[in-house]
Image 1 (cartoon, rainbow, N blue to C red):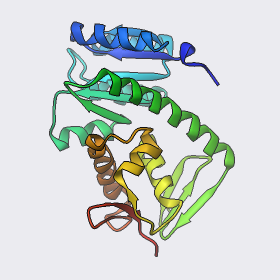
Image 2 (cartoon, rainbow, N blue to C red; image 1 turned 90 degrees about the horizontal axis):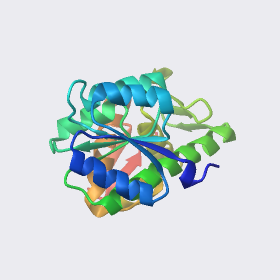
Image 3 (spheres, helix red, strand yellow; image 1 turned 90 degrees about the vertical axis):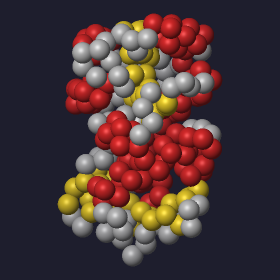
Length: 229
């Protein structure tokens, strides 16, 4: 397993003050950090350096962050933490829909940003271990192939992002059991900040849209459970 000193982070941010602060903090954590300030430059740097994780601003000159994320994921899947000044749920869902794994709304804590970058990298490692297990999970109408990272609902394949897949796998381990939002944050994202539970809610909405509204249910506003049928 690569050490943090060997991990490469591409930061795409056009605000020089924010970019400088993020570079400084991640470098202090031992990461190899590259910073670019526009979408075209981000794609060129991505193709050239093959970063382990991308910190990507939503609003960029030229190509915006959504298009940059879409093209990166099409070329080679990579964990993406999206930074946004937009708080509307629709904007956040669009970002998650093009392949972003997590998001933070500006202004944000540098300590939290570092924690989320570490969490994204741990998730990649856990996903690799799960794939080696070569397991098929069945719960009701849902079939999950962990080795191929494919999901089928009543025989039809559903196209999920990496985070949606990981979240579904966690819920499918114990169909019918209620997982609190904070527990899912800790298990999937690697942290349990109560203020970040919107991240879970947004991904669950995406799962319901792709798998059908009856697959994942909200239980008394406490958390979520995969429906057992």
